[in-house]
Image (cartoon, rainbow, N blue to C red; front, side, top):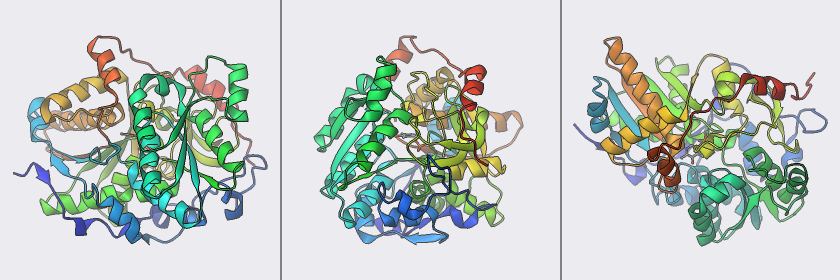
Length: 450
Ligand SMILES: *Cc1c(COP(=O)(O)O)cnc(C)c1O
């Protein structure tokens, strides 16, 4: 029985899968942040290159990956798939567990899959600098890496709590040539406005997005880059699931359930959407998104139009949301602290074609420990949510006397998140559920869309 299931470089996918071609109902248009009227491509042009705007709304099912992008992806792709023999043994399951490991990229997560594509299209349109936000630091490092490869400057607004908790992520970005500011910062009007009201603000992704969007909108040579949520990002990540399909085929297996953690939804989209395509074409496969109880957008939020950022300067999207001024608690899975979710994933969850579950952080870290002690890889706290989901699926199958084939996305390693392990090992972690009352309050402030 194989442990590593590997593909050769010529098996790196040549096309991305665009799930917009296969939705159960038309994609709900993005709305202008002020007028709340549908946005047109020119509305988005100050922020994104035309190629990405086209991809965002493209009806084309298969989109060719440019050779320049594939060449760079070949630095770490195809990523390995593992059969988790030792994890299976550790939890005593009869089920088969596979995981796709995205921690092999230079930045240590799935995020360079889209960062490289985004840097490529921006460079091609003559852009000189990219502004972005980062939560836990993974997206900032991925874009710093990709920007460096294409000779683009990168400015990163890093959520302040992460800036303080994860200095090594910042150093990684700086090593690759980026400039990094703690957000809220005094570099933008949005940052200054937040600081005036909350001088001790720990920041949030919503605030950092406002800062990066303002930076891009006020500089002609600068575009904004988003590491998750949007359709084109989800599409770029489908290389993960497309490879996974080839890898499963290689060992003559097929998953009953595909699992990923969800922050904005991109790594889950990456592994799950190609299997969603199979599902549309008659295959039986469950697709399960795992989120933290501290930021339960899919399980406790509402499916409605909301602003993507706190200052309400970015597009309004129909998605599961906890409200745009939601400020999450400082849980360690920093990458899962976004108030909303990918509109694409949200739509499929709403339609019952994907499922969602939420876990507290202590059981998630317990699963991370079992994984680290059996498979060896120390997972990112975000990815540990998917591990917990997979372990629970296996246990459920055992209790029903069934044997399932379970596939999950190990979206990144946790080498820069060891502070979280420090807290866990010393008993300093606590569980946190975002209170229902706070959700109800926040949801009063959704835009009134006719
Ligand atoms: C950013 C990140 C996530 C969450 O973002 P998604 O867009 O939901 O994938 C999950 N895992 C890791 C390792 C990350 O870096």
